[in-house]
Structure formats: structure tokens, C-alpha cells
Length: 361
Ligand code: SF4
Image 1 (cartoon, rainbow, N blue to C red):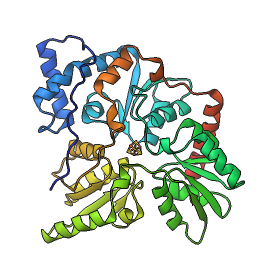
Image 2: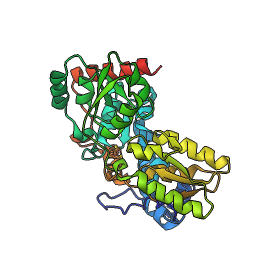
Image 3: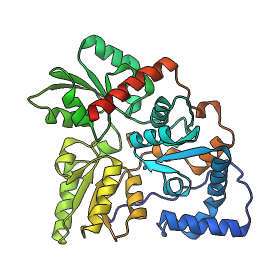
């Protein structure tokens, strides 16, 4: 059984796209089909349907000097049709900061657009889907962090980057899925508080056993919490009977028993790079334990035939943004589609991010 693909989104019909000639639509649809590279779902007729949207979005980006960035978990029409930069949340914030354009459109969930605003406060940051939250960032508030500080005075607090600006402003340091072990190990003292991901906190506890005590919070990513070590073991047994040597690649937001069954653990960018590398090394049988967008990217970008085994899970928040939302935000953004943060919050949140850069070295 091969991994499911992200379905081509049905247009909501909430906007009237600009009119283009048949020739322009045909040409754009051919381009889209080529870059999305998943002919079964994204056939030429589907690509013709979305072509007027991608044409107008790309026109408006150029006309208004907008840099459009998209997280890897966005749908392929956004990732390959209109994005200027695609990566994980941390790399994208740096891309937002370094882009010469003064307007950034961030196609993803809310906390990521906020992180872009924290690192580029002088830029306009547009976020087309204000309702696109995240179970991790929604699991903790700034008041929750203040309560932890009152309960455990003097103990350093590290927060995963999947948090709101207000939470980042309250903690000592931010971490990402690629540096959380290294940074937490370097924090002073023999105790630390880790928020909000309890599963990442569980690996951290195991990693620091005998060195530091970790006080964990209770949040989780509902996508990555779905996977279990048992499911992976049963896939391994099944595929081994067919002579398949499965390579298991998982994200650190998964539980420890999943990590224990994995050959490679890393952020969505690391998993994409590693899957492409395995393809070039003649190891095409890959099980991806993460959100479906990573598999879509690997399919589109691999030059080798890969056998993606198992099932992925789609994040309902990540899939809230559609081309129509992006077009609407570019034409005339609503006030809640423009990220506004208090200056004091930005300054404090910047300190937590700068501390991350310093400790990650
Ligand atoms: S995949 Fe998980 S961590 Fe990422 S946005 Fe969705 S709920 Fe949040």
C-alpha cells in the first residue's frame, strides 16, 4: 500500500478571478502540471481550473513587490505554483527577513507568520488565513508561562518555535526541531522547563537523563501524536515478508516509541533531503511519519522512483489556506490578515530567538 497524496483542493468560488485568454490558461496549466509533478491528481483539467488564480497571484506579487513564502505542508498548487520560498518555519522566517521585498505573504499557520513579523518588524507581513491555528501553539498562553515562572522561580524556560509571539516573549530561549536537544543541554542549572510539546519534551527528558531534570508541559501536535511505534513495527513486519527493507523517517513531534523505530529523525526539510538522498542511493522504500505535505514535496522533487509506504496525516490548519485566500489577501487584505504585534512583545520575543541563534552555534 502506498502513501496517500494530498488531494487537489476544490475551489470555493469565493472570488471572481481575472479573465485570461485560452492560450494563457493552457500555457499556465502546462507549467503547473510540470512543477507539481503529480499527474494523477493534478491533471491538466485541474491545473486549468487553478491557472487563472496562479496567473493573477504571480502578477500581483510582481506588481506590488511581494515575497510569497509557504511552509512545506501547504498544498502543491501553492508550494509549486506561487511560492518564492518553501521550507520549514524557522528557515522561512530567515527567508522573510532576508528578502529585499518590504511585503511578505506567509502561507501557513498563524504562529509562523508572527515569527516572520518578529524577525522583520519593519516589513508588512500578510497572513491570508487568520483562523489557521495549531494545536501546539494554541495549547499554551503567555499567562500559562507566567504561572510556570511563579511556580518554578529561577528555572530556565525553553519553548518550541511553534508558539505565539506572546509566549516567545515570556521565555528564555526558543528552540526548533533541529536544535532543541543541543540548546536545552546548554541551559544553566540542573533543571529546565520545556513548553509546550509533551512528546518532544519526552525525548528531551530521555536525552538529558542523569544530567538535567525536565519539567514538561501538556501540549501536542495532533498530527504527529497519531503515529505509534506499534503501527510502524507492523508495517516493518509486513513489508519485510515481501523482502522490502523499509527506511523509516519521522518528525521529532512524534512520540518516543516512534522515534525509537525510526532510521532518521528531523524537521520536514531534513526528512525531504534525506528521502531524496535515499532515492539516489537505491533505497526507494520509505515510510514517512509526518504531515502529508512532505510526501508531496518528495514526489514532486525526486528524480528517482520512490516507493512511499504507509499513510500520512493531513493537518487541517495547514490546509486551510487556498489560492483564493492568497489572491484575496493580495488584492485587498482585511485588517486581520495583516500581522500586527505590540513593539514590546516583538523586542522580548526577539531576545528569545537571538538566544536560540547564540546557543545553537
Ligand atoms: S502539523 Fe501539528 S504542529 Fe504543524 S501546524 Fe499542524 S497541528 Fe501545528
